Image 1 (cartoon, one colour):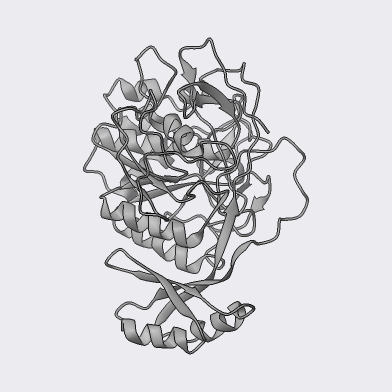
Image 2 (tube, rainbow, N blue to C red):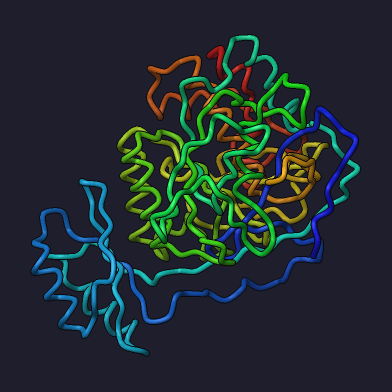
Length: 411
């Protein structure tokens, strides 16, 4: 489907939310949601394993060889190490069982999950900036909480560094697959998702052009985990997190997820990847993740390691497509959200992919005003000051809509 561009507007609200179907960005579909979950999708003949701390590298390699496997990529941040392993066709389950029992060398073993981009455009003539107002962002701006001094890592399709509302604030980053630059948005399924996500969070403000972003003075470090393809994998995401840690990022936006029950919040499905979430949090970071667009209920538990965000509409109701459930922390605008595209033109779309950067940008605002707060303190402020929508339940909205003004002030 073709995304329609919007013209004739100057101050447009930003905020595309996109959720994932397996491990990729996804725009919400307007159709009725299926009654059953979509099947799990994985990269054929690959498994992902987390090495036990202190395990000898050669011994790990020997253990992999004993199941006729080959380590094709080693990923580490200096504290934890993961291996991407290729095994003979049809031998994934057998290899996982044997390696999973080897507790002397491996802490976790999982399939290398794959996800796809899936998006749909909305009415481009509905350019209301309701998301910024819902989050009380202007009140935070009055405290000079504009994202200055804060870096947001964006794991996505890359980000166009020359985009009008981002120019001068996009690092070269990396293409985690090719080791090329990340400040080129190669897109996914014809949509340049990473650029749109970034303008939602951090578009330049008061520049008489396009939209406004809550953390409009923050720096974006883009990590292209798709390389122009329609899907990415757990291994690529894990390696992206390690890269951003090496760059000193305390905030990561991951507008990618899998369908229920295979979401990233399900530690049993993603045990290796989840250890990287835990490690990032223990190192002082916060990782914001879009809940998904399949309209299903997620029974995975809420943890501080993954800040899961649902999508709401202009009336503060849960968006009809949004995944809901127990892992939610917050909700933010995700229905009829307007931001600017890779060519610096206004565009509208639905999806939790854009609710996620809205929420992430509030954390950036808090840290820009209060740089010595810990990640736990930032998260606590957001939770304690969030606005509960009408007909509030935690399974729809988590703690509610982030209130940037109150959170920055510490009220």
